[in-house]
Length: 250
Image 1 (cartoon, one colour):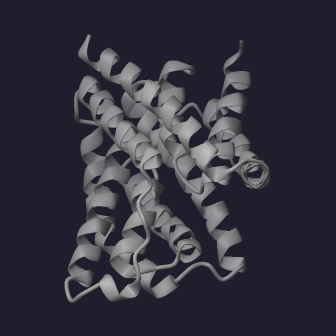
Image 2 (cartoon, one colour; image 1 turned 30 degrees about the vertical axis):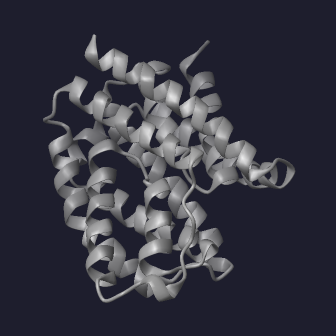
């Protein structure tokens, strides 16, 4: 099967997952680039950032039109992650490939576990005086994760916005896209040389298919229960994480 066909199929799966679950799909992008399309881990994380940036900006536009983005709070949350995202992006190319693979496997496993055991939203009354400090810490951690591994981190951003800033779910999902877009762009700026060597003949179709697949994913979410979708995706993600960890250790 040609690289173009594989890129289109993988992009569609990533987009479907993003559209159906509101996050998590980008965690599949990097393994697909490595094991299906032959990218090195470093090149895959850079390519993943391109895919995450494009799909997040597209989804952000859609959520902004429906009023689900809290721009001021999102900008402050994102600001805490810009420097960590840029620093981690610069450091990623210097790390050994097995280390990057193992780190990504750990993040994928964490995402799967969170989907199998979804957290509960809290009310605004639970957010005390430490809220801004916790928000800054969460924003910085998310930025570092995005820069280092090329994942959007929506599976971490949404719970953080709900529990720390007491956002209701729709606003958390919409605002997380602003945070993810900003972090991804910050990380890409430190990878200028790396983006020049990307195989755009693969990344372009992959990204386009992901954007289109996200719209179909929204329709899929209405046809299948969210719990079933999350559990099925979590099982696949755990398998991917286990495979990547074994690959990193052998």
